[in-house]
Amino acid sequence: MTQLYVVEEADFLFLMRKTGLTWGNLSSHMSKLEEAGYIEVRKEFQEKKPHTILKMTPSGRTAFQKYRAMLNKVFEGLQE
Amino acid sequence: MTEETSLETVEQDSVRELTQDGFIEFNFGVLLLLFFNIIYRPSASTIFEAWFNLSLVILCLFYIIFAFSFYKGFKKKYVYPRIGYAKLRAVHSSKAILGAITIFILAVAEEIILIYIISIDVVTIDWVYRWIPAFFGLAACTFSFLLKYRTGQNRYYLLGVLMTITGFAAVLADFISTDMALTMYFDGWSIAILVLGAIKFVLFIRKYPITNTPEAADCEQ
Image (tube, rainbow over all chains, first blue to last red; front, top):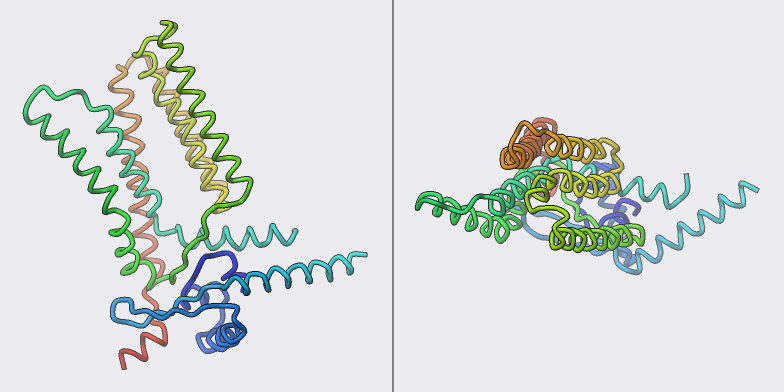
């Protein structure tokens, strides 16, 4: 989610390299995020090969921001 | 490290990843070479020179119109199959916008002051030509600050510092003519940056082999 949050859109290969996840693992994560409406999946062809591009939706961005705010609160509590 | 800082670090890491192909440097080098030679070339005295100047203008126009789609196609073929594709977000932080506005105001103020001091004969047009490398070197610092801000790499400061130092050196080197100083500075720097971009691209190609993704492999079977 963080990797997708800092860019406009990205493909599977980029996310695999940045997260260190395998294809299958990343694919299952992305399916769940797509079901939740947090990401959009676009399929196109590049050099006659299928190419999947992922983009975070506005609701995904809002959810991520809320999640970050929540985590911040948790860590603030720990510091006290 | 705050949450904002760590997000910025992740973004800078992505920018570094996507700019290691050398395209930014190559593009900057080509544009600098073309623009300098169009703007500064002395007026043509022969038919051959006139044709050459016209060809440069046409080449520059073609470059501006078609470079973007050419680079896009080139990246699709040689870059994305190696490191993947990601579209970076536009810079829209308040700090960056404020920086851009400040640079714009300073540039306009510099032009006004320059026109004024030329009009009251404090300096001559030759003096302005002589000082162009130093002004350009200072302007290039903004480009290097932007690259540092986007990638988080301090080495981009070096580009601005070196362009400024050599710019002042070109101004102060009395033993060479203004024409020679300008040509050496601009052609030298544009070729150096262009070559740097080309070397970065070759190293990039060698470092990252084409990765066959499972979806492409499934399609081939």
